[in-house]
Image (cartoon, rainbow, N blue to C red):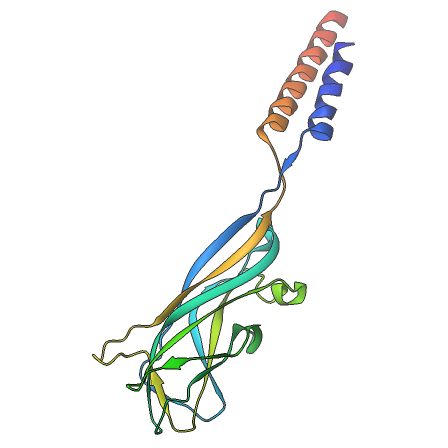
Length: 203
């Protein structure tokens, strides 16, 4: 009778107790350093960020990836600043997939240009491109007049990279809550005790 009771407790531990599955985030810092100055070719020139870790699927289910970055670049070249954000995205196996739309960049008459952008991507296929156990990079695309130059050196000749973050929003892999583990332990211990008593009684 008691053994059946313990078995019932053991079953209830798994059947009734909920599993923890709360949303979680992983945030990593990135930077884009354009030093020495780079000459634009008139199309979109890509500048990779510092590398960051891919999302390890053993942690759970990836729901979205987002980025944000900001900072200043120094522009020199043609009569008036003509600098824009061509694209911003992640580079995987040599291919960039877009997560941020093209945006204009504000430059003053001295060639100091403020660059900022952010976006979130939750398309299932795109998320597979940042899932793994290796590393990847954020890719910043700048476009401007052919022959113009950009760098992250300011007017004081100090190199100040663009900085930002990459964030993974995910649902952790389900694990038993403490109550489930406790009930499991109690049920198992009780079952072992009853088995020993039964054997002793039959000896």
